[in-house]
Length: 143
Image 1: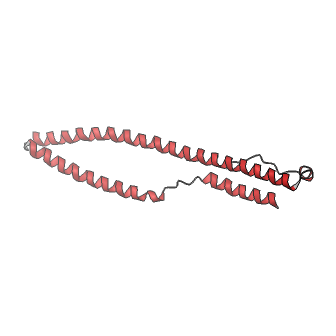
Image 2: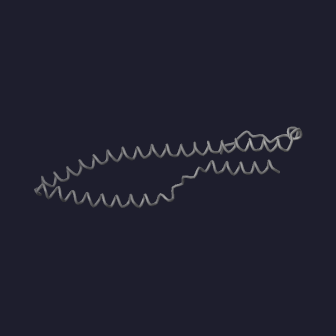
């Protein structure tokens, strides 16, 4: 949780100031506080987005390598079936059907996973907590 150095005014500071000056100070400090909170929220959201982008890149690279490996395995299975005496076109058709069915099942699981993104938490929790702290601080300053 972030903390800010906003000391409460001492009684000596308050005694020499008019009510207008005090409200001016409060407005200026509140404005500074809001700017700091916006900066914190931006930083927190940017950090989450950066981490997500890196992870998506790794998934894509891993998927591309796995895809190339799968294609070679499927060719090997089809060639193996042809070497065992099956007609080459039937071997490739059979391997293609099995791979298509397996791919469909995997894609269905992916669709279920994407629809489950409703549970993802994009809320910048640290900013929310500091906003609560700031509201308490501002309330104390006005009493």
